[in-house]
Length: 92
Image (cartoon, helix red, strand yellow):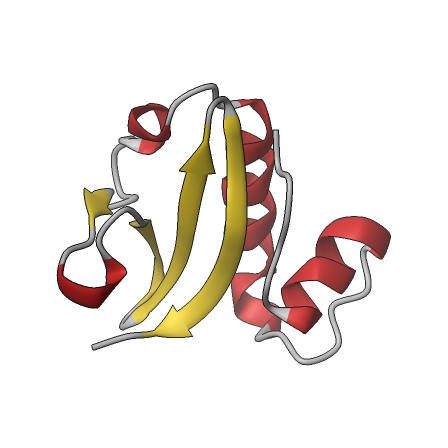
């Protein structure tokens, strides 16, 4: 289950459906990925075709990433069975 979302516009989209501040072309991808994060019980469940799931390292160790578009990723942490601190970022 999604426990927390860092990115303000992404949180508003998840909670209310309002997409202000988000790329309109990404909305279907973001919705699908958020829906799947919400039902996942382990981060590895996000290892789906096209998602480019991977664990991060360095100062982001303990977080995971999935592709949204180009360099943009949803990054997230994990606490027991919950996705936490979800962010939308270009970290490359």
